[in-house]
Image (cartoon, rainbow, N blue to C red; front, top):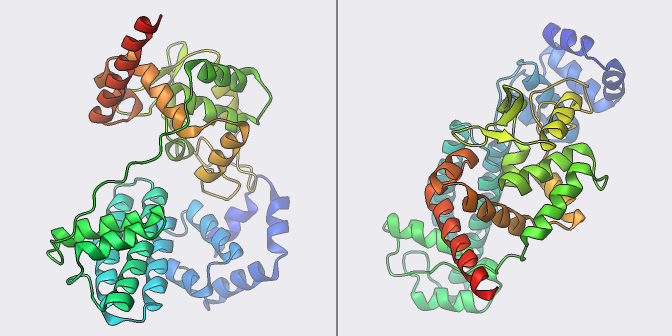
Length: 366
């Protein structure tokens, strides 16, 4: 506890610490830790609960290295699976839902966390797959008295035809069931997504100009928007960038988005320098190393927050990212673009082919 007291006393903004400690919940937590009623471990804090004050204290302890870092989304996912499985009534449904959730999804997310990669997106997708699978297996049991091993193609076709498009997510379960030799008779094809909103090159240049010199948003979101429009970066990746990804190279800046750093042109370099110099967390006023720090200690800005702010401006995110990527591969060889931007070679080549088709049609129309 002495190390925690020293860390709190050394805060750049002591008034924020005093405000935080006024909460009786926070006082009870600190007293419990000091007298040993609450073990100074993740498990000890888990036993207390996951309210806002406990979650913040956990982040403070992790930030000051008094607790080992733990992937927040993985921990929440493990608890979510336990809660979800506990609510299942039928043994035949529970058996295969539990196997699918733990052997496939939880194992995959743990591997992603161990590799140091973001888990927010994979956890969200996994929850959707598991939820739809439980719904389907419950319906299958209640309607036809069958389980995953005796399910027929007609059962699945009926399920998909009679409900919303989210039901198509059971495809992941049957791909896994085929590999696990649970059911090899059912096949579900890929669902064709709706085409993204069109986003022209003129619109892209307009928004780059607006974010660079306009006042439609605050500085952090302007920088994030330019990273989307200039380098075709996903929002989740932008939010998780660290300041160390931006480096000085001669008289200019470089940013590491893939295996090879890419140059940052002016005037964006000037805007990026300004953002780096002024970014701090709202709670402690200290530099946590994130390029886009959250107001919560030790965490980066939530991707959903960035998404909402840019969409509110009127920028269609997927269309903007695709337009930026296709414009880039016109001027940069696809293998080099893949290395600079952190994309797979196959994806970049696919966009290069689409860009070439559009370019070939353009002179003909002219």
